[in-house]
Length: 535
Ligand code: GLC
Image (cartoon, rainbow, N blue to C red; front, side, top):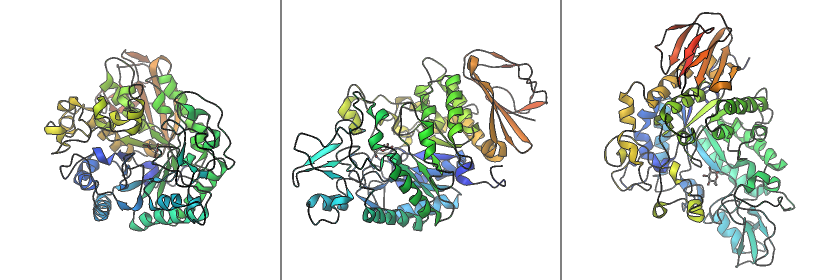
């Protein structure tokens, strides 16, 4: 038994991921902000999610749009003030919505006072070792480590004639987590937010925070996805030890969640993602496995990814389910070629919200927002600027939320920081709310069912049809309650014959009316139909 039937928000609830720059702009500067999120809390409550995770809002020079923090206790003026953040916390809490912050532990901004001090001198500098500095002649890097965003991970600093490590941009120097003073200072910053009442953190690139102490080379690898073979810069034993320390810190507060971004892509590595759950109680509460993102609309592949992910979850642990985020293509763009993308988005919603695990919905996914085409002159993402035209960066999945048919999709009165997707006239929250069969209403209904039915939020998962022929079916069982989920990934009718004889009726279907009786031994599943059955 998983628990005594109690609803644990981070296990049994649904989490909504907000990229704050693009959610809602309250002051007309073209950039989303915290007061904007507050104004949209009714929308979030209507969708029915239990928590929001907001990408970073700390003080930042925005070289990586907030993932480069120069002060972990301040809010960047682009987003508002500390007061605004406190207001968000209390407004969200008053609606029963939890607030999860993003916490970036691998690196700070180069403008963080710690780095400024660390950089200032080599000797007698108490903060020198808070970052990773290494000797090498100029031009000869200390080793072959690569930045995840391209190029060498080492930057030469002329002032002290050493290299510093940056796993991401050179404006994001890596912290040295082997240094206990730095650790203490960082944990204090985390506690600052816990004391204020935040409900948890998504820990950015947490499996990368510690590197090989001897700075040994990674295996030689040419090409973009070098991080497939990066034993020296990922998953070091000390990372696991730090995660356990982190858990102890979080355990001082009640009902906190920690979520690890375990970057192992592509195509995901469930064993490694799950390893950060430790024994299920001593490490992170949840970790992301990105395998589902790379299933490219193939039911059999989805089945295999799900099976493998569950296989690695420790007995006391719990999986998360994620199909989109701010770093990758929007999910709907990955659902194969051709027509039917919107139908597929509904099947995907049913998959996410009926699997065992905490679903994470990326803002806009609930209305089937598409990637945008970003012209060269419009690119904001430094990675896109660097690799254009081979890789155009991550902006395409970060464009403004499409609220309505008004100017800029109702996102801003000003000029939006990234272009609004031109399809907003048909594709927006307001229009979808009015259409009972819209993607939005499918999400809303399924989130409600997920909350109301124990099998869906807490039950065990058992496969019935494993994706052959494009159909996936499974059951979710909680004590004596059972729900069967059947998903048609194809554009054809499917004759379903499942040897389960009880009488079933439709709890939800994208095509059939609720309550309709159904004989599992022989029925027709319509093209792209998602169906949930109860006894
Ligand atoms: C994570 C974030 C990404 C960021 C990187 C560096 O992967 O999701 O947006 O660029 O870490 O912080």
